[in-house]
Amino acid sequence: MAASDYIPISYPNFSSQDAVNEWTGRDKWDAVYTVTLGELIDKGIFDWSLDVLNWSSAAYSTEQYSRVCNYFIERFRFREISIEPFYEWATMLHRKLVYELMPKYKNLYKYLDDDFDPAQVSDKYHKRRAIGSDYPETLLSANADYISNGKDEESEDIERGNLQEAYNSYVTEYQAIDTHLLDELESMFIGLYTVSIDGM
Image 1 (cartoon, rainbow, N blue to C red):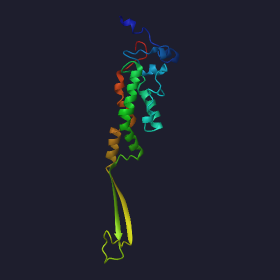
Image 2 (cartoon, one colour):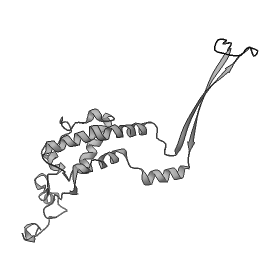
Image 3 (cartoon, one colour):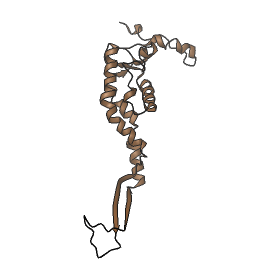
Image 4 (cartoon, rainbow, N blue to C red):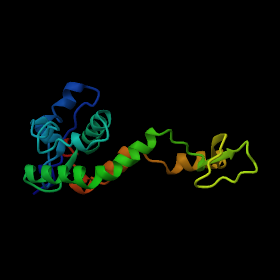
């Protein structure tokens, strides 16, 4: 095969949308090994509402489900699925989300909903009961309850570390839970991006 068979002689005028569209689009998917997610979407094959893909019952919330589904498509649109046929791959994706990932990530989503404070080091809760008696000569015992007043006391000590250090650590190390979740779905795709422009 000569280079001229796959390298174009001329390129489109990239300032013209019509010229670019002749080189790209739904009929220009050039998957190398399997098929790209974008091609499956464009052909109406990949749809989160399919029973084989719908994992909404395992999601943390409706909002989280919708957000992750959209992020999944945006992130992996130009990636090839790891195995064929599609339904076997879709079954594996569903199983991974429902049984392996969401049981773990649900707790993290809940943690963020509970007023996450990046500077908090510890949270200690204390509870005690103070008992008083108007009869000091009488000992309180299991069968002689001469209690005349009692008071429950509760307190919470939240220890916060250095705010600047916590902030720097948060900025440099924090990744959204959605990102961690989709990182674990990388194995569902071949590790390459399919170029959808002929010869480029």
